[in-house]
Image 1 (tube, helix red, strand yellow):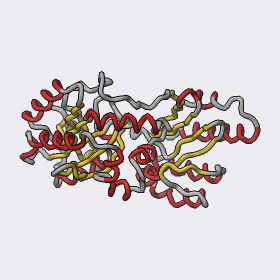
Image 2: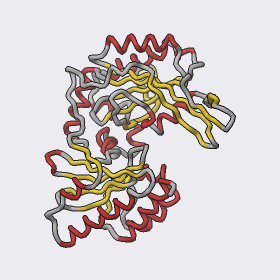
Image 3: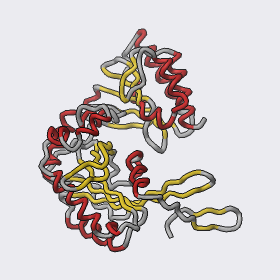
Image 4: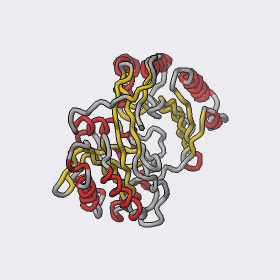
Length: 357
């Protein structure tokens, strides 16, 4: 039996998952934590909005992959009668309505309110606001997104607390016959109480037939570049730099390596197109995202900050960090104009809070 097993000293017992109060609670959990979803191909999702009107219904969540592929997500509890077959017809109807949209009409229509509320002028701005690596090329992403909208090559994601056997058979059949145009992910998400903490257990149910590049109909805008562990590639990117600029790069490297001694902080370097841009990424695991991104952009060092991560992982330290960076601010993807020891000290405290150190 799949689930969480616990042993309090008297043998192993199968834990019973906590029941969701209602469907809205499961919806909220996915909307705020799309990284929970074990999707085929492991794409990174950016949520564009929830309860999006598509035709005569409202899609629970509309997201987009960093490759430019749209993802429609529907959430149901097993007890809902629609969790057997109606959920499939619903999500396909949303996909059918979405096919043929231009990016401009999508931004002015179904997504307008959500983009405005989140402070984004466009879909690409929303995606770049979550692009900590600096890996998404705007032109390639836009072309790919439009191609996917034209062709209807979407990802459809069904999320339930438990999957009825009837639904599993329907999804397996659709996944087998639509591999050229659709990827269908069937996900269960259960939450347990273990030792006073909540434990989320997401599992992929449907067969992993979508982890490949489609043979036609859409261009790929997979971020172009290479990710390597550690700081070596980032250090090599500025080895010919001298003077104060070199000193700042060295200081940032030393600071990042100290962060890596904290629990669950991992350092990696992303090299952009043709080696023109490098980012050093002090990421917090298992979320695989950081409070900051360190940049070498044309031999200029800078730090990019991610407010959503501060609010989620280091809310107590956020105010002191904002005081340290004044007159700059902690926004979503904005760059600090001046890097001082005071700022690095404040950011260190934020990483300590974020990792529980």
